[in-house]
Length: 201
Image 1 (cartoon, rainbow, N blue to C red):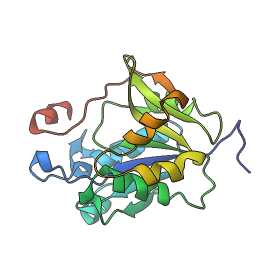
Image 2: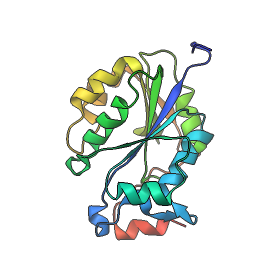
Image 3: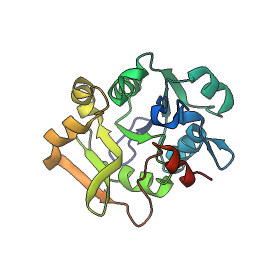
Image 4: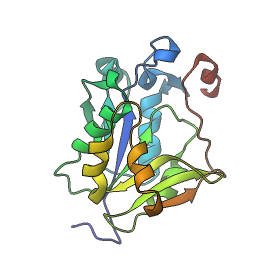
């Protein structure tokens, strides 16, 4: 069945390559949450939020993450340049969608376990066309996840450098972004430091 505007293919793109430098070099994909690796939890969030297929970008300890986490059914890509920052992982994730026929990519970060399936579903539902850009908002402030219609992938990849990810592209296209308020169903904290580990169960 070919995708239509009523039944678009929204791929989940999970960025899970980080080495956890501020966590003493503990790769974020492998942090435990509810008894399972964080990357597995995030894949489930994308699926339950209505995304499919799910593409996972690994980097630090990629082999261990692939072995320990249940990533069955996912397209797993390893970013060899993960140490260069999130931008390279975003390029890798979008590149892995080439030729899949997906209409949009919904990008989620592995280190934000406070963002669940309901927020993903809300942002996903903001898709209108391959020209769409939508992002979760928390009290009016733009955050993750972010949806990019396929028409934006080349531009996002071109501008994604260092740890900035898509920030420059989003800034340049701010008037085109549909903000989807999610503060009532999600919390947008990051797991960046040892103190942040208290958010994990």
